[in-house]
Image 1 (cartoon, helix red, strand yellow):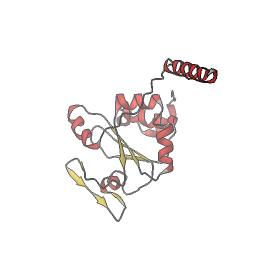
Image 2 (cartoon, helix red, strand yellow):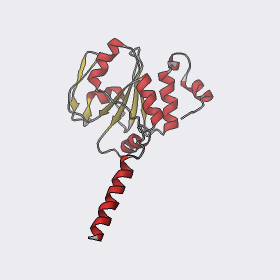
Image 3 (cartoon, one colour):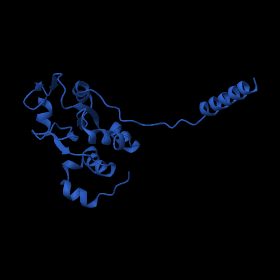
Image 4 (tube, helix red, strand yellow):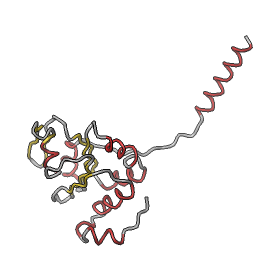
Length: 176
């Protein structure tokens, strides 16, 4: 009987302590569907960031876990971009800029993925589409937070219209 009371007391103390433990507010990227971007762009112009991934891509998972889980990245994307996660191999029809894109078995990918990467399907790829509807900019490969910050701020602050990326990169100071 004494063992039962001791076990019960231990369990109650555990639940009491964990119930009152501080909860860390975690700011995750709020991904939206590509269909919603089209509607949102009519209301407010912003650059579009597309995280182009596949289910089988290991580096895509690392980037999701390390870069996109960073609080600074999540907050900045929420403030400055329409952020979309897009599986390159989706078989769903994608409508963008009045055109319809479908799955292409030759590429084993959706035609929209082929379009935004100019046919260079590498994963992960970060795609930036400027708010003025300019050409999609594809940055292939895993990006650490500091490298991601450089690219995100170049487009998020509208600097891409004023300076070349090389000039901007020379004077950039990472703060994340």
